[in-house]
Image (cartoon, rainbow, N blue to C red):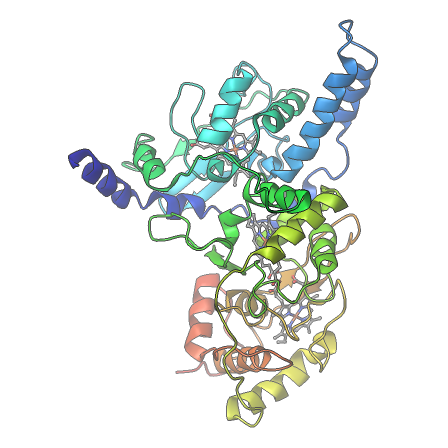
Amino acid sequence: MRTRTLIGSLSAVLLAGAAFLAWDHTDEAHAQDKPQNTPAHVAAALSASHSGNGNGNGDAAQDAVRRGLYLARAGDCIACHTAEGGKPFAGGLPLQTPFGKIVASNITPDRQTGIGTWTDAEFIRAVKEGRGKHGEFLYPAMPYTAYAKVSDQDLRDIKAYLDTVPAVNNKVEANQLPFPFNIRMLMFGWNLLFFDNTPFRNDDRQSVEWNRGAYLVEGLGHCASCHTAKNFLGGDKAALQGGALQGWYAPEITGNAYTGLGKWSTDEIVEYLHTGGNNRSVASGPMAEAVTNSLQHMSPADLRAVAVYLKSLPGSDRKAPAALAASDATMTLGHALFMANCAACHRSSGQGVTGMVSSLADSAGARAPDPANMLRTILIGSRGAVTQSNPTGAAMPNFSWKLSDGDIAAISTYVRNSWGNAAPAVSADDVKKARGSLGAQMAIGVAQSQ
Ligand code: HEC
Ligand code: HEC
Ligand code: HEC
């Protein structure tokens, strides 16, 4: 009883999860530097193992490395474990938390500073249980809470692949948090409260495809680390029903037809995940990074499985309110401003241009309960995902200098209540706050609201 209270309050002091899960490695330029095709070292390792290593295991070893590359991409290990401009997997990328910095580890096979001396079992324990080589607790900025669902075999393959990566001597001081957050032991309490380490189990009532989708979404894909809201201690709330992160909002991705993917066809979801955009939406920010580094490399069959699983989830019970009337004063102003500033690209129908300019019509993203993405896009502009199938990635300019808080509120309210959308209005005060927290410039020559 007493231990419980102690552990509970230590965790409360920490607010650990909320902070440590809210990592920020969003940097689109950085994402675009990442290797796209089979990296040279993997090709080299593959041909070396193919030419035989004398024990007759060449083909098996080659298959493991190839599977491992695919799985490491599905898990997006490179996103966090590679510093800007740094060597792949050599660590050093700082993940910002409100309590300080956690730096991702060197997971190249270097024997001094990487994981070159680690056994498969130690590796599996780190990725699935969040424990270092000597049993020390890792912070959940490393998404072991999701990877706990990954099979040991898949992790052995990932390790086989990582063993082929060039070893880089790069000493990383992972834990740069101030006292008391630097005490790894505190994660013991957090794990007790929030870490569900039950392995993935097939649901026999569902199809093979559905189960594959569930395995990928809940495990390597770690979609919940962004798309599931966290409680004040960082534990998960309702699965995949939308969550805020670092000035972005990762929308609901269940079958809910109002704020989720209910109206997206399976093909539309596959196209979005594979190319970074479709006739409904274009991925930007953290999602663009996930598509560029990870999802675009997945097989069509796996992406389909992900789509089938997501669409089957009932999701939240959010329902559309009545849309504001087109004759409403804010709507009239919003319409005029939209025609003058936005319609050239998004078209007066709001439908945009497939794969390039997001559609705002009948859009779950546009009517999300939290308008963060719309406000940040208008205030600081945005760039769509860059993928093999869409190598340029369209960009949207910012309007902070041109439109007042009141104007942006009116346009946002108009978009959220037009072309099949209905959602609560956005106030000038919401825009003011977003402008402040994004550090966006003030509108030129326009008296700010209030
Ligand atoms: C969202 C960011 C993120 C992703 C994605 C990620 N990691 Fe990590 N990982 C980290 C951070 C941060 C640490 C250091 C945690 C700490 O020091 O407590 C870490 C630590 C590790 C460690 C322990 C290393 C050591 O020296 O203790 C291993 C092994 C590891 N990660 C493997 C992986 C693999 C394999 C993948 C992909 C399947 C992956 N990580 C994906 C952030 C990430
Ligand atoms: C690093 C955080 C992060 C991860 C991990 C992530 N997402 Fe996203 N996702 C986002 C954000 C933020 C958006 C909103 C992007 C935008 O508006 O352009 C988004 C948007 C989406 C959308 C479009 C929704 C809409 O209504 O427009 C889909 C579909 C999606 N994500 C699926 C997934 C799946 C499936 C996974 C796991 C395989 C995943 N995401 C992992 C952050 C993330
Ligand atoms: C020069 C062309 C252009 C203009 C003008 C433009 N946009 Fe965009 N907009 C884009 C492109 C391209 C994207 C997709 C890129 C992305 O998502 O990063 C986009 C995306 C968006 C998104 C989706 C953001 C997300 O990812 O969730 C919203 C909302 C949006 N625009 C609203 C507006 C509004 C409101 C205006 C007028 C104030 C406007 N746009 C003017 C090109 C434009």
